[in-house]
Image: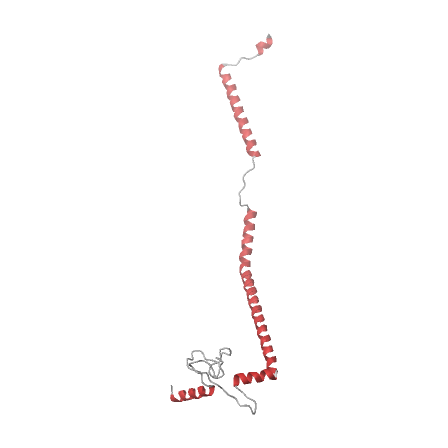
Amino acid sequence: MAPERDRKVPARGSARSAAVSTTTRLKALGEQAAARVYRARPQRRNRLTGRAALLTLVVCSLVVALAYPMRQWVEMRSEIAEQQRRTEEARAAVEELRDLKARWQDDAFAERQLRERLHYVRPGETGYVVPRTAEDGAGADGSDGADSGEGAYGPPRPGDSAPARPWYEELWRDVDRSDAGG
């Protein structure tokens, strides 16, 4: 029985102190558990880190630095394309002129052009020019001249309502008009 005597009986206030200590312990355990949970959860980082900000700054700098040269490059490419198109047009025109020159080297072509355009005739031939009348629009040979596109003596002039005159009559009329001051 001695062991029972050695046992201390808590006083009235001491039970309360044991309860407080249990409460304090539970509170401390709760705080520790909460700390473990918060440590286990990944911490939220800033969305914009220093490296990301630097990378963004470098990319923006490159875009700004390369914008003007890229615009010039695109403009040059379009100019080159335009010049190539013009070169092709000029080559086509040169080919046409070479063909025309080769045709003019042919005596038969030259003679036909001289007869049609300048009304030349060979020695011993008699040349006739039959003007069309304004009423019927046809020449004495029955052709209306529509296929050749010529007026009375030559190609029609824009705005002429009267039949065209030979070029030398037009020349003298212009000389007379300028001499008269009109």
